Image (cartoon, rainbow over all chains, first blue to last red; front, top):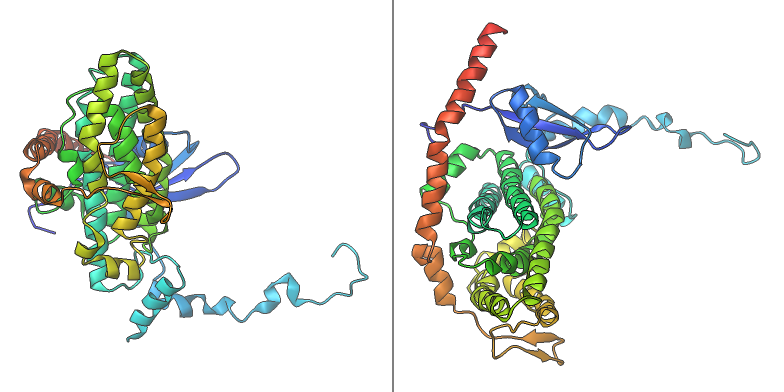
Length: 98
Length: 309
């Protein structure tokens, strides 16, 4: 990165809801001067073929993320809790609907 | 091998995706940035050869189609700059490198488009070759690039079909129109074969790229696939592909074909194509002419932020 480049437009992450009933899903990023422009650009860039019914944009700076290096320790607490899964419990075959 | 290197090697070996925040070798990061940037630049410069025809297309239907297609190329460029930014590249910096000639774009876009048949042949052959190249990249080991390629490939299919349909229409027209199509095919066939890059023997980076799974087939494999695809399409259209050595080889189960003029590819890559200067000058002018708009939008956003913090 050279010094004379001015970061005039910040980066935004874009999330699109494909249709009613589904979650918004991350689709990519874009540059825009503000949130309003980011929404317009997101519509032009990520929904040219009816891919969405709703869009969220979030400043990339505002996203906090877990670190891949700490992945094992971070997710370890759920690793040894097999009793959280229904298959942990044995029920006689003769018992219906459970 | 360090623990990080082992995790990276295992991810590649298991055919899983590398994601932006994962540790990766510096050479992998650099190669990915270069590959994605060059691809993004190609999409952006690729708007020019056909863009010139938007106002001259012969009907409102053809204008609307061409406008949508060129808009897609812009979109593809932006998906790719977005993927490059996940690796720490900055898209303003990448644009600067393109304009200064420090980064390349596909040499195919340095050929001129003198007739409307060129629009059809670009869709059929150039976008067809691009699809051949890009479909395997949907399985690139770098996640953001693979995901961008999936979107792009879905949209490229429209590009190829509109081109082929345009050519069918022209072939059903006057003798002059049929000649125009044949002339365009004669000019674009060899440059399209060159889009797959130099022959495998002269492609020193292929082995490393295949090991990293950022390239899935060699240049020559993809070129062969493209020739085999195109022959029946040319037949259905009623045009001749300009290669006297082109014939079916039943032993190989593939078509044999002639050797492209590799010195021409070298010449065009190093700036000696018919349109290199014009394409870069146009991109530079668009960047410079748009600067005041970007600055005004940024100033407006800053002022609003001050008024309503």
